[in-house]
Image (tube, rainbow, N blue to C red):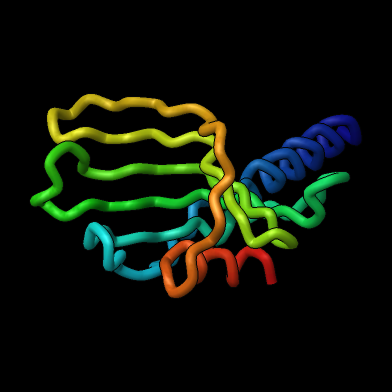
Length: 130
């Protein structure tokens, strides 16, 4: 009898641990003035770190929904890394949903970009690097 209680307790604890997995929590960032896309970030995906040379960093998932008049894409989901000290960022990977229903995975881009002022990228930088 005592052993069954221990197994029941262990099962309950395992079940509670599985329930604590982060769910996506998409937060509206704004509408891009460049392509009129609607941009969101996943607040539960923010992960802060630090590199020996790069200093403080932050990774975050981003969702971009394009307007109907976009020639190729419906949406993109991307993983971005910000270098907080240098105010730069890199897109690590992205998954594009195309208008024809196909998807395309784009892996790490090889260049680091400055965060432009007064943009959605700067707004996101201010959120994840604070």
